[in-house]
Image (tube, rainbow, N blue to C red; front, top):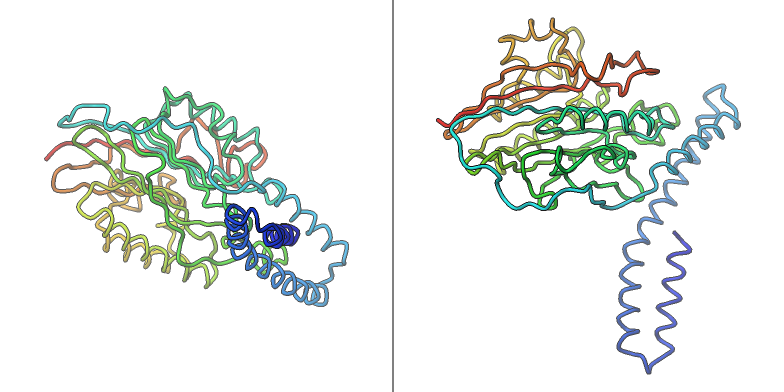
Length: 390
């Protein structure tokens, strides 16, 4: 990075020495200066980070039985992470161009949705392999679902969409790979229903807890601040009459006090956004909330319940599982005490009803203890809806 700044400065100085080319070179000088202004703070932040990390390393070696070799191994792991996540910026996902609704207005219909955290962190920190991600892609292509939202699509987006055809998933969000210091937001949406893949909204959470450096030093279990976790929303044209604002989210993963505070702030942020941007619209919210609704036995779970109640009351959304099973006890007993959820609400013009909800059996037994054979550390959650015009 310093070499880049140095080169840009040389270019700027060079432009001063050739007055005959004043017009073009002044533009070049101006552009170079603008780049330096953008890049230089990043370099300064990185330098500050190195100083902070050095102090942390000394403290870490003093207070543990680890050796310098142990820390060298951690740094090698960190280097592998950066190698896998080196790409930055936006990339195209092969979506068809948006041309408007494809079907005439109807009075009723059905569709299905799936939310799936694919464990797409770099493999060096326990993320999914490229082979497993391609397997997920092949199975999803064979299922031909109507709408799928993904979380943790950080470093293996190309593998994720590798088997998708435009006949099955013609509309797909563009992929944000992050900056030089983040993994991106990890969010992706694919759909058979049209939406504008460039003109969709995304927002980063106002709060996060945990950095990659803290994870390496063992002071945090989740490097959420190394990502740009948040939520996205696309407007789906189900037909010429019905539009749905479909939200995809990934909440902070930790259970410590900082993470719980972040979750509360972030859910309030989402509620405000939904009530403002999607006021009066049909809405579905799906994703990895990292908050269960059952087994309320710990302080963390009780805090989660408080956050849930405030969010649901503030938005008017319903939890799909609770609508299918009528109460949370039956929902919990059926095995849906997971962090992944689907929420929804209709409006004055269209009613939306939950028909079924299931963990997609086509993916096999996927859970956190089946790390050898599972395709992810989350179950894919699938639901079916019926809608009708009021």
